[in-house]
Each structure stands twice: as C-alpha cells, then as structure tokens.
Image (tube, rainbow, N blue to C red; front, side, top):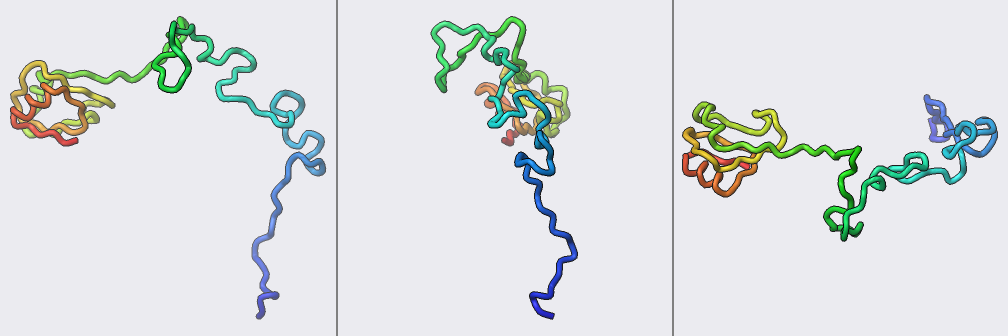
Length: 150
C-alpha cells in the first residue's frame, strides 16, 4: 500500500458559507427584515431597542465625571437599585457558643464574606479560616490562644 492509495473512513464535509446566495435561499439564514438581518448589524452592550441604556436613566451627580477612577458618576435611580452582597459583621461574643478547638470558616457559617469586630471577649480557643478582622479583634483572638489561618 502506498500513500496515494490511503482512503479516509469519514466523509469530508464542507462548512456552509452563509450570505453568498445559493443553497441558503434569499435571506441566508438571517430571517426577514429588522436590524439583525442587515449587513454590518450589531449593537452596543446595554442597547435596549432605542430606549436609553439603564445607566443613562440615572440622574447625574454634581461634580462627578465619567472618567476612569471617578467614584460615582450617577446617583441611585428611584426605580432601580443595585443590590450588592454586604459583608456580614460579627463580634467576638458570637463565637463563644462554639466548642474549643473547632475550625470556623465563612462557609461553616453559610456566608460569603464575614468581618469580625473586636467587641466583647473570646473565651474559647478556636481556629479561624478565611475571615477579615479588625485590628482589635485580631489582637484579642491571638491573646485568647486561638489561631488565624488566612
């Protein structure tokens, strides 16, 4: 057997070339009429069919610019609120109900982000993993003999 005698077991299939007439009919798979069927069609992110984009509905704040790094170019719109996951805040007293030596993480408390503040006293030795701490909380935790793994 020679190289010119080798044959493939699978058929070669050409890719359909859309938009050049022929087998795809008059509309070339784009349907009839409308903005998406036109040549060069496409619209920017946030396009709402000619209506204002969502961030354009927001009233502008005095003195703010749209430059990168500016803090707040828009105020809250009265009909729309951005909902962010807030950091859950816990004080040291909360952790006294756990057993000595227990490892505690935000997943254990079924929360994404938790910050521990230094109000109260920690009376148990615990292992903290994956939390944010205030300065006073960190000092009190280490003083109580607990450990912090980040």
